[in-house]
Length: 151
Image 1 (cartoon, one colour):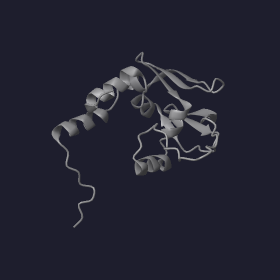
Image 2: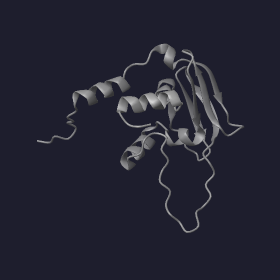
Image 3: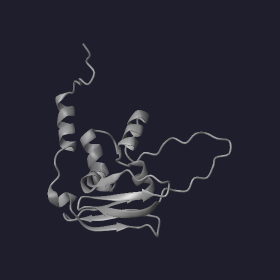
Image 4: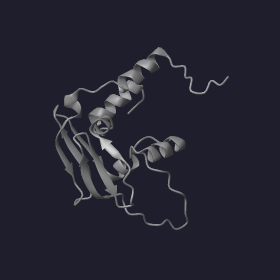
């Protein structure tokens, strides 16, 4: 008999996981204003209906692609969403242009999708995913507090 898939978690770990996976209020995942700053090469900015403001750089967004292929690759490498792949050590490193989308478009009323300059287009970034992955100081501090790790 296999025990694969069975995980024993402490009560604190389970409470922390439940907190992270809780359903966010509709107002927290409803964007009031979405700005994709492609000309400037900066990234994505969202003003949420609850007054919160979030921003992500294109490099972070590309490394946090939520498509199944990218998620599986990150999990296999032990990387978090948005964490860059380790660069191989080379005597003469090749220049790689920073990630930038060729285009972006809304997906219904629930997400945004980027067509990346490298040809990748599988990721659909839902508003809830983006809000949960907010990179602002307030949210990263709150995440560090719930995980019990220093910021």
